[in-house]
Length: 204
Image (cartoon, rainbow, N blue to C red):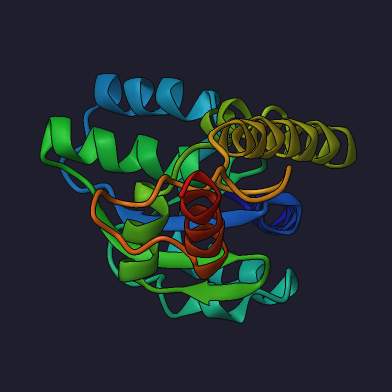
């Protein structure tokens, strides 16, 4: 690779860093050509790409892109995953491939310019994907305002139904529940006693 090619490579990698929501660094030692192709296919769903890099050139690319946090990870064999889409889904793809192949060592990375530790990468891999969240929250992520309004409407409707059921049982609203009859043998109110005495006198 001559000087011009190196310069072009530095600019290209710097652009990839700048255009990515997250960049994950892994050690690809032992990765075959076929396995690398498999991993790249898995990453496509998250709009992410894998690139085995030369540390010295990538160091300059990271500095050019203002991603100094990446420079500390450029030790030993390194492959970078540039994520432009679903960060959690990309992390899941890496973790799933690692589990299946027993290859890839997480080094860390960056997300929105901030450094990511290995533990944080692992945590990202355990998060629900964007597609799953969209399904759970009725499109709130895809269309925040519309989705939120619909979700709130559904929630309010559910609460209203529950309150109506409670009211029908006489627990809230519509006045107090009917008074239960006094137990057998309980002393009658004084008014009732006077009425009974008067009736007895008249009969006498």
